[in-house]
Length: 170
Image 1: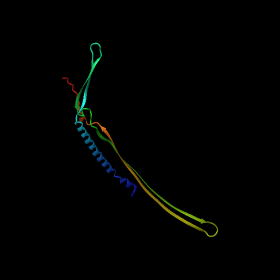
Image 2: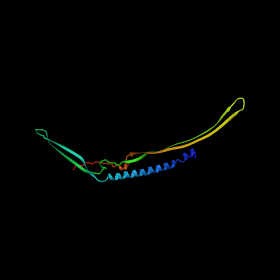
Image 3: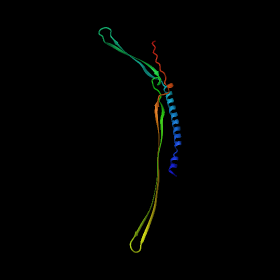
Image 4: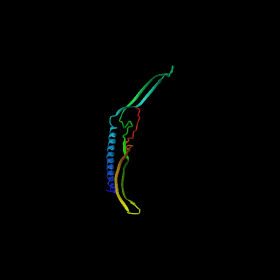
């Protein structure tokens, strides 16, 4: 198997497809959770002090001074949405697939001839020593990283109610 084939065997299109479907499934679950949170904001009204009035009574004749204080309050049962609570929505802003692969091959071939001889007057002798060696190594390293960035976004405009406060005197 060659180095090029190792690179082709990385299932990159499959990784992208699976990441895309995972993000779509996660986004759908996040949206459903936010819609359920919105529904809960219209449940269980709670008593809230909406007005607090403090009246300081003063004497209009001597000795001048404070003669009393009265406090009155107006309480209304408000839903959490009326109190200003809004659901939080999230959106996947960025997704990254990073694949790192290092492939190395090494092949060493060595061939040599050693010749020894004696030269001089008389008989001549020589020895020949041939050697051959081959080294081969192959290694593959790989890693992958999937990263997504999830950010809060404002709720859809139609979910944010227009709140009008109307004061009436009876």
